Amino acid sequence: MQEEDLNTIVKDADNVSAAFIISQNLNEIKLQILKDKFVPLMSRLGKKHGFTFEISFDGCFDSWWGFSFIKPEWEKYKIDFEFEGRNMQYLIYGFYDVGISHGADKYLRSLNYKSSENWPLYQVMDHYRNWNSEFFMELYSNEKNIFNVFESKIEELSSIVETLIMKYQSKSTSSGKR
Image 1 (cartoon, rainbow, N blue to C red):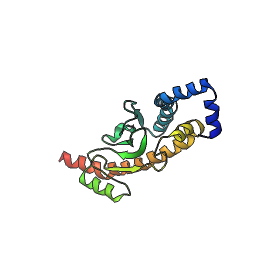
Image 2: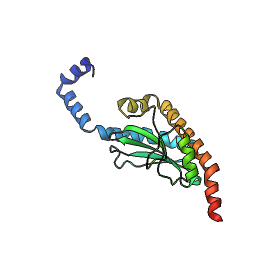
Image 3: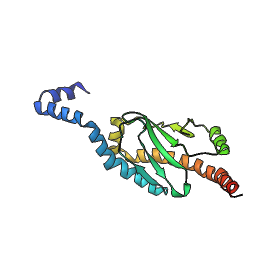
Image 4: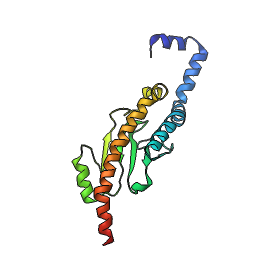
């Protein structure tokens, strides 16, 4: 905080009171901004690409909180964004435990992504990795940039899912019918 701003706040009891009220309610403020600005933005993004956007705010300041983009025709695949850390820190994106076949798993391992026991494919967000004050302010000042960043991740993962469905899902489905 700039010294000038700090001096302005501490000179007046009402300003000090307001500062404490804001600090005590910061998570509620963030939550309201997400509901008012982020959800409509991501819903528009989902609709543009044929997805349903799903989000729940239960535990949104805990580790592994996130949101998803779902297409019914993809059956077992969905695009997930989750924070590895508490307080909206370390955002990753990818697929979460979708029961991938051996051939599909081999294909995914050939890509430039990470994997774990629960995430057959994921990557750390290069932009908006931590949702701090800059992210929340950008929801007001440059939501188009946020839209574009998330759209690029949706398109990137959609391409991978379409390849998985085309190359591997039809093989496992046809082999199951024999």
